[in-house]
Image (tube, rainbow, N blue to C red):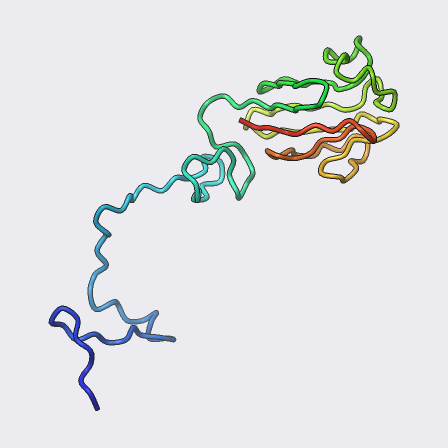
Length: 170
């Protein structure tokens, strides 16, 4: 039988496997890699390790991870809406109920009080259909009346058949 392979003057033995791997300590202590960044970037909400240190949103819990105050933007072809933390914004054609009614007045199929969008204190964006006639849709799925659905960066928010906006969290 040939002698075990040599590495740097030491014999190299294959790592233990099966039950032995859980019972035997390693032959040599693990040394931290030189020059490697030992700082892990973690989500402040769920503590998942972030694969991208400059990520805007956690892949696990979908909450924003930036330390600055989050902002929700919904970009429609007729205008961009900006919602700050704690603000609730009614989307619809009635200026008495929606401060952004001018964004939707040209669309007869959008209800006067169609839906509400908001950003909660944790930075999670939400939408709720307010009993609209023609529906509120997130990524093509119709929301039941009164149901609150979370919004993620890049989601498509559609009011009725033809008023589509893109969600931006940042």
